[in-house]
Image (cartoon, rainbow, N blue to C red; front, side):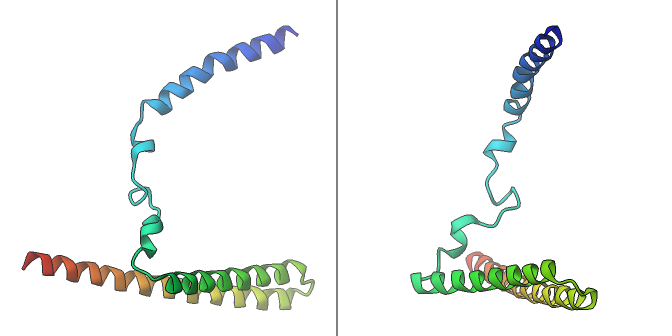
Length: 121
């Protein structure tokens, strides 16, 4: 019982110290999402119509369903060769999605640069 009290006392003493260290670093809590490495949040789709947003979300949903379906097939497959084939299919799907996202990002960056140049004129 004495050991339990000592352990509890140590935890209670360490708790305020850990809380002070996280409170002392306001950068962690006040940092905008963009700087935290997140996408631009909901602003990413702000220029879209409702129909475009729905189409985009459906596309994302379809991709997720394909990935999950392949994952389930991979996990349930017993034959090593078939499992490897499924893994390769999933990898190709991931590469295609990544390429599409990078192309979209490049287009957004180019649009941003054009807007910057127009503002300078």
